[in-house]
Length: 390
Ligand code: GDD
Ligand code: MN
Image (cartoon, rainbow, N blue to C red):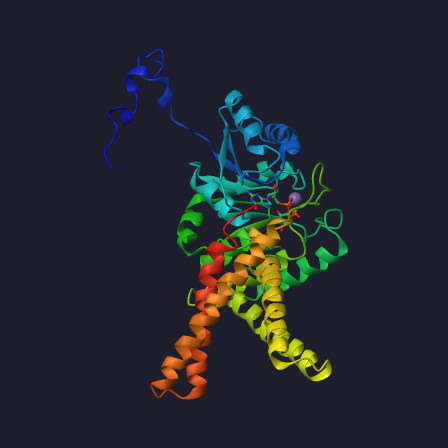
């Protein structure tokens, strides 16, 4: 690519400070960069910024809103606010969803030696920001965690009993993989030194919504941490984005860790759904052919359609939860899924027959056909069927 002639920084046009140096190159001296991931949090932004302001008197901080193109216009409001306050920044991401990656990219866009993550909805107590920052700056602490589970903390006001139980179970499961005995590795409220983040950032999975857990797993060594009790408050505006299925994303994160990067967790899930499709197929085939006495061909066609439809719906609800198709888009999605899988079936049969004819045992030939078709289906439907976010 050729560089446009005006691409160099426009030094000559920058306003000049009293000593003649461009004012725009005054050093940025933030001690803390707060990353606020948002999805439809417009109504919460003004009070959040006011609360942070109150909580950090006399401290140089910056705040980065990382918004995944919220339909309610959170990013536009964040930019408006940033025009009036140089400490505020907005990073808007298009065609993306994901709490962890939003936080990671926000941290990477910041410069302060201490970085933190907090919900936009004021469920986390901003009063802890100052003691957390001080601990990180003055003590031998690398990580400060707002915890619902240490003495004085509580989650009861924030979560439904169901989510509460899932959250506790996930916490216990997650602790099995950690070198640091933290009480609330699922917390969405924590501050850490940038050094620690940079030490492990290349090993982060970024999957799901549990960045803290991800960091603790990527650290590969015990981390010097301190926990701060807080009561999770009820949300002021809007609703939680994390439904019960986030537990699934969390399992994907663990799976991803366990399998390394050999099999992407999403593909593993796609295969599991495929296996469930085999069961659906056989059930429908059996019912139609044996019980209802339909002809075999009819039964086989019906079973195929049922299996493909159930695969589509399950993949939509689980495997591609983050890109879930809703409403009328489901019809288009279903049709494209049928199309991709039919081609997959043709490839399957042709390949299996070819290798079988070449003398490979029948079961291996069948597996090769099915295996290649699965990869084909996965690759094609991920682009064709689930390419759109909304
Ligand atoms: N950019 C972006 N992209 N932000 C998101 C996304 C996304 O896909 N999903 C959610 N968020 C934002 C929300 O707007 C909110 O500011 C924050 O991430 C957390 O989402 P909530 O919907 O408020 O989650 P929660 O309150 O149910 O759960 C929170 O507290 C738990 C307990 O500490 C989260 O912080 C969890 O991570 C945490 O485990
Ligand atoms: Mn929240």
